[in-house]
Image (cartoon, rainbow, N blue to C red; front, side, top):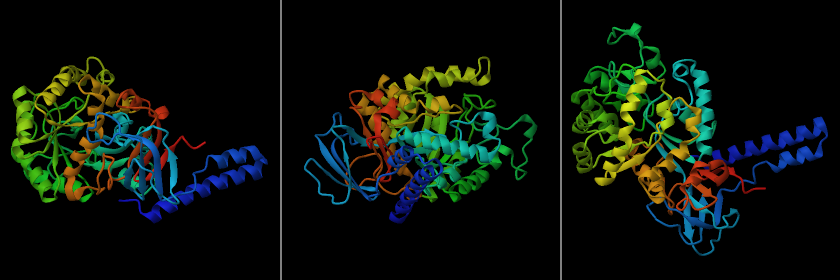
Length: 467
């Protein structure tokens, strides 16, 4: 939901009240004038619905290879309303002196798992209350890394999204798919052997009860479970069309869903005006998904050149991730998962080269799982794209290009408006960067020091320029 004027004003008023009350209590209980003054100094500034960025160099997220001339950008409410190299009149607006810093769109991670990024595999099927609190804390960290939007492709994230949208938790916009939809022994089937045999219509397993993954084994089951995710607010549908690394009973070479089953998901997604994204590594799994009408392939690291050309010719999106070596090493040596990771990792570079060669519509994401340390490297994983792209190309991918993929959700888009770009009429998700990320993309790898202001939906969540 959009932050309304009233919601924004009340949120700010509550924050100011809490801060002033704390200062007053410090004064009463300890009679420490200096401590009270310091607390007041950290309180939010007087709230203004308008924000004017002055003297900034703009990276617009639309493929520019250099920054703009010194410019001024006016935000009214949650929308960018004016961009000009001339002075902008904005009476009553909060003025931010950019002093030549870079203003760029908020970053977008197109392959994120908000409920699984930090928890361990065992925890993810455990205490739901604990997991939501952990995910909420991680969501705030994600926003503070400059990621104002994520596309969540598998996990019980609807409650977290609702809390963020309501202003209860600070975090990014979330485009949720809900539960990963898989087949018996497919990627995402984390059941134990004691859960077999599966009885269709029987009791759900823990994995399914909490909405992490759900098993379907016929087109009719697919239709029902897809509709359930959409009923809960899914912006897209996530199917696992082939084997996966982290699933112990899902060999990489297996094409899991039949074309008829995938087509059933596509049919329902089409009826709801949105799309299906399919996890697939191999050429056969990818071709089956494309034949069924899937619009986005996740990963594709074991595909051949013929398949890459097919993806390009059909105009299919390819959501790629420059998976870090630390993620591979996180799987124990000698495990089935580590053996599969060892098979997949050499294909990452080859797949990026194919994507470039055939000019495939390529999105960027991280796919971080089960590691707070790796989640903290989100910006560094983005910066690692310079193995194949210029900084401008990489940053465009993580802003304007990823936003184009988000728009495929059509009427299921939870945040109507233009994201990922700086232009008049776009939503105000903005970063003020201390330096030129087009000249030094490693700036995004250190958001704590280099992102001076983080704004999402016109609200400033971080401002280190205020002294």
